[in-house]
Every structure is written in structure tokens, then in C-alpha cells.
Image 1 (spheres, rainbow, N blue to C red):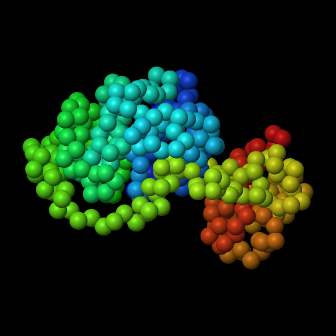
Image 2 (tube, rainbow, N blue to C red):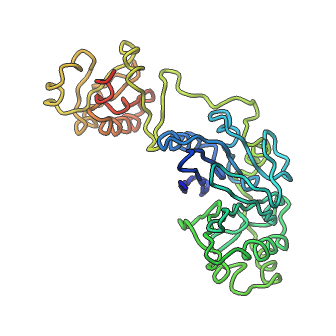
Image 3 (cartoon, rainbow, N blue to C red):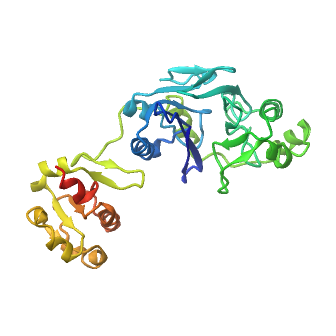
Length: 347
């Protein structure tokens, strides 16, 4: 199995990528709308085909990317049937199973944070994706969205704590940089439900928390009831000046075919050393400007803004940094030539 744990710093949300390494089919758990480009880039770089996106619950702190990924990748959407969200292809209930290829998960209904909370357990009980029901040394709040401290205690102690102690716990959030726990650890050390706590201990703890109202709840919950579809039903705008592909590293790139067709409409900036440029006559007619990478910050005034800028080097590594330098200097239309002159020489 291919497994990746991805992170959104704005909402402290974990997104999980699981894929079958033979069929190359993949699923995502709890994708974030603002990180869809990142997730699609990773899927492309790993040569994976996204078949399913799954939410653990209707989030109050971020908008899901489920609908957006469905438009981009043609995948299906799954979430709890009780939520009743729009655009869902696979409404899930307790005991259902789903997955891709040999990667199979079963559904546990774990309400209490919200009434539509689900946890997803890998077929061999080695991993559980707990959403907000069980966090590392904590749990989701229970004071809004049909929350119930009593039901959450039952979900944690009767369902999640019934899993093997060795089962790894992957939550939807962590606000302290922790990435993974285990059922055994949480049974022993969870600050709210572990260490022999009973229902009264837990309920009194939860009722006394007095947490602030989630900042994005008024925006996030209605959007998540549409599986992340914007109110106008339109896809977010994309760059119009080029066929941009953003890498998992966050670098906007164009390929050689596009550059070949659009030389006259862009400024081509070569960031190699002078001796490298002199040794590659094939590029002399293609390049508008030579500025070595280590001089670029001091010579930004030489780079015009009337056209988009395409940076290039031998491999695309240095030109990627050149893009970042230009973006920091408020150049809005800029991209790196993917794989650099290695790709250009093959066209």
C-alpha cells in the first residue's frame, strides 16, 4: 500500500492518501479545498488514479475538496449517509466497506463530535482514521453540530478502544505537530477519555471546556453540505496565460510543447551560469534574458513585467527557485520550464 499523510497549516487538517501500488488506484480521506492543487500534483507525480474521496464528517473549520476533486479527477465522493450532503455518490453507514484495489476499509459510526462522524479502519486493523472523534491525547468538541459528550464517550470507549492496542490512530487534526498515535496509547494516556476515565469524568470535562466558536463554521458547514461545491457551482479560476501545472513542491511549470508554441508571448529568462549558456547554442535564439540565479535578486529591475516570464535552466531545479524569487517580487505571471533544457532538447 502507498500511504501519505498530508497537512494543511491553516486549519491544522490532515489529509490521507491511500493507494494500491499495483492497480495505482487511490483514495483521499478529508481533502481540503485549498489544497486540491497540491493533492492532484502528488497523485500525478506518483502516477496514481484518484477513484474516491471520503470525508469523516461535515467539517466546521475548513471546506472539503471532495466536489472539486470530483470535477478534476472524475472520482466518486463518499461520506456518512446521515449527513445528507449533496453530490455524494456513496452514502456510508456502519459496517460498510470501501476502498481501492487491495486497500479496503470498514466503516465505524462514531458520533458525538457531530452526529455524522465516521471512522475508517483498515481491513487488517493496523490503521484507523478517526476524524475528530478521537484525536491524539484528545477528542473533538461536542458543543455544536448535534454534538453529544455522552455519545462521543461511547464512540471512543466502546468502538475505537475496542480495536487492537497496536492499531495506529490517524486523526483529522492535530494542533501540536503530532502525527500518529495508537489505540493502546490513547487508552492509557488520552487526556479526556483514557486512563480509566468513566462517562461522568468525560462528560464533566467536555461540558467545562467553554471553547470559542469555530471561526469558519458559518462558511464551512453550508459548503460541506454541498460536498465543497461553491454556491455558484463554478470551478475556481485558473491562470489564463498558460497551461500551468503546479508541482507537489508548489512550483508552477509549463512544458516544452507549450513554450515552443508561445515563445513570442513570453519573456524567457535563463538562470544558468554564463559559461553554460555559451555551451548550448540551441538556446541562444530562444532566450530573451540571461541572469544567473545567484544574481537574480539584485537584478530584478532587468526582468520586464509586460509579458509572462518563463524561467529555465538545465534541469528545472534552479529555474524553480527563480520562480519563487520572482513571485516574492510580485511577478504574477511566472512559471518554470518543466525539466528544463533536458525536456526542450527532446522536442
